[in-house]
Picture 1: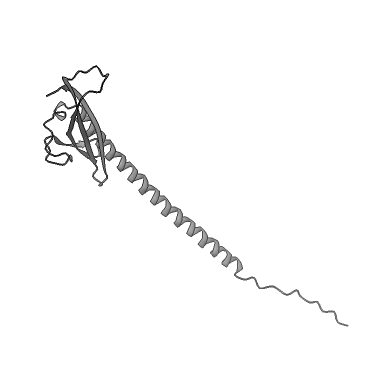
Picture 2: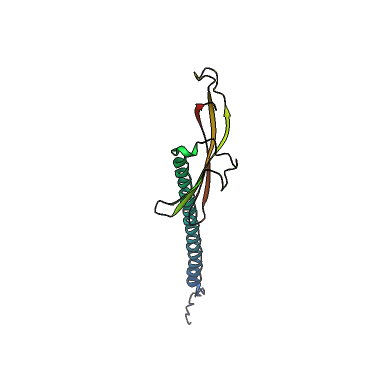
Length: 157
């Protein structure tokens, strides 16, 4: 009698590791590309926020300069009440900081009112109301406009 041994059958697994590795490689590539595009978007958002902040700071500088300028608070600044170019008091400030920001600032006389009762100002005085506005711009095109109200008490004219 002859004894024969049967060899176990081999299951064909040739290439299964290669396919699994390629699937993982594709998944990792998609994750890397998505991560890079997300980082690029976040960098653009941060740059836009920084430019908006620079424009805001330029506008704040314009308002501060106008508030410290006595020529801004004259009742003759009434030519146009919208605060556009051509008003009697309309100025431009260039080269703010090292980023080349600029600001246009303006002061417009709005109205005269009587002092409120109990303010210890008699009827020979008046309160003169002004709108001080400034628009800050950066070289990248960011723009911010700020309006600030101000008043001064003076003799009634």
